[in-house]
Image: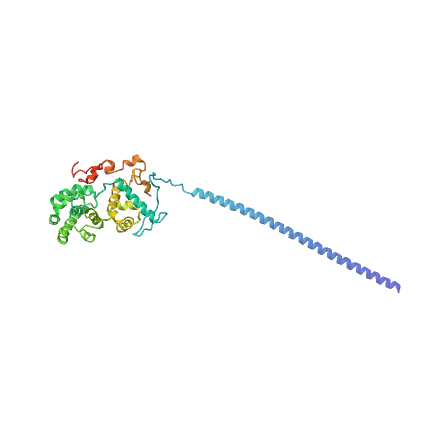
Length: 366
């Protein structure tokens, strides 16, 4: 009985020890497995961090290389700096800006409407000092002669007209005489002016209109003048301003070129140019302004080769440098009295002669 109990106890103890060992082994295995998993996770994390850092470093190098490449391309493509010609200093710095499109001033750029007006009037004042004797460059003694001479001046020079009209007015001194003239005889006189057939038709036609509609007198109103054959707004303003003392702006080819070159306006239509420039000046200045601009265009600021180096308003001109800037070379480009040559008129005003101007030679005088 005792022996059986002892055997039973021994078996029970062995079983308990075996179970304990098994549990201990399982616990150790689990711990080992957990440690292994932890090590694997750490390794993966370290590898991932290393790869990320490497990727970032590589991306940074690529970005730097791209930037350097773009910079090199930009340097390669960048155009050479344009040489800027600066006008010589006089009493003001070089100004920029564009003038109005209509009577209302709206200049783009950095020049305000007020600055544009001041610059434009400054240019006119300085031109008045340069050309104090500026006058219409057509010879005339009365409104009839002036309107006829102005019509004849289309597509030719005032000099050629002045050389031609003495014979015309000696033969046909009044509108009545010219209205009754033989067209072939008038054509022969006007042949040196060019387009003599069309001009003959115009001057005979306007003479007839003066006789029939205005009693042989040239009208002093714009709306009447433009009704005459061959007379447009430009011709009308020449007559009104110089024969009747009524202000007007004469928009001829010289005037158009210069006001755009000076950026007073960007308009190309003569009527719109007239409105734009008229807004910059008081009405009382219009006639003299026209003379100043036209004289400057004929003598200094030429269409193809402006004499920039001899220009009295160079510091005020945004187009300085378009022409010859060397003073000595520019002087050779000057025309008429500024270049020492005879002017356009055979019988110029005394003020012009007093200023050193020379009268033009008659037709056929060498």
